[in-house]
Image (tube, rainbow, N blue to C red; front, side, top):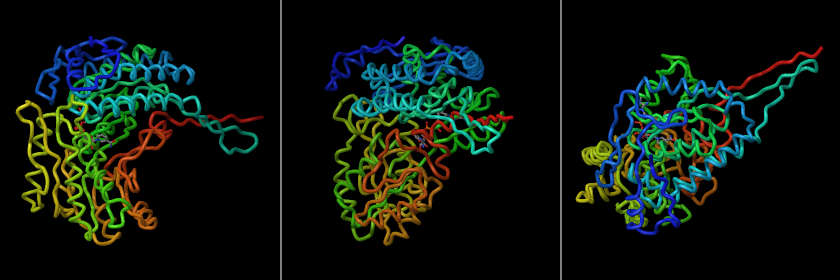
Length: 506
Ligand code: NAD
């Protein structure tokens, strides 16, 4: 079992983080019915750190039989009412304890995340851990403040409109923000009274496994929150096709999202809610209030989390009159995003999650060059001697929106710069994508900013900044970026059925 590392003070340098990492033992078992267990088959797969290629632990490779068992356990827990029938205020209290435990174990969780998938420890500690705790606490605090409705009936009837939990929810999540993505699903699913089976990505299972234990410690009853590590085509598919899973929530690629809709149609028509890919346009007009700030945020928009961000500002649309000046500013701003050791708190750009993802990024850089785009910054693998997987943030100029580097999601730090002359042209290019997750517009002209923001087909639009948001606002995509919304009170829609109960008055 993993040792809870409760350091008295959060480490402040790489050596201290490394010392803490050396004390960690890693847990790779599934968590079902309140206890750790190996996959029924005994199969495992290695969790390998992209920082140095070190094998961290063997992880349970769950399959169909494990999915069947976990679904039966989750169903029994749901039917028992041990969680589903608690007063919302009681679920709230337990989930708030869960959030507090995440904060208490913040150093350990941040380390697990960094070692498992390569992100900088500074970000894991300052962003991922607090955002995960906040998602759970915010949602818990809301749950005893949402009311049902009464229908506008004739005087001799009462129509009561209530929300009921779905039952068994399967949540399948990706590797780029393993804890945060999980929290956006499990917080509203648990708060509304469902039982949950979380399937983390095979590339980043460690924090999910630890979260299940912390939830139990907080008081979530056995069987209510289960974690099944394993591969998408085995345990993920088994959950998606399961006849007794009521609701399937997903964050990941558009291709897998489409497949999950097929699985739901082939099985029990379970509710399917999808957060999928993106190719977000970041539109900079010549009258942007502060071009240096715009360039700094455009650099962060492509380099934060190594570009492995669904909302990455991977298409930078720049008004022609400032195009070369702005490319210079971006290249300058990217100096703040040099790859470094992920356990160094000063590092801003960490390791790429695995060899397959690194190969994919390198292949797209070659594709950009063969398509005729101009490589103006980066493009090379670096720090290879460390045994880790690092790549320089990369900028292509002279891109047109039809090139593959501009139309396909790369999921790495590769920026495509595209010129435009008018607002109409910028809107047309921005919307010419199968995706519609996010977009940004930079202009001092309030009319331009609002006209463009309104015309953009995206679930989140930022004016004069990039990547804003918090738990109070919904998050999700238009078009092939998904359906439904995470975060905010709107998230409850995904995890509840609406029931109308009619009473006829004599
Ligand atoms: P992925 O689609 O490859 O995998 C996501 C999850 O689905 C993993 O847990 C995987 O094991 C599972 N899976 C794969 N095949 C499956 C199958 N046939 N049946 C059931 N489950 C299956 O995505 P990824 O590479 O882990 O993550 C990157 C993708 O996630 C990018 O496209 C990114 O844009 C997207 N993403 C979207 C958001 C958002 O909120 N819209 C947030 C983060 C990441």
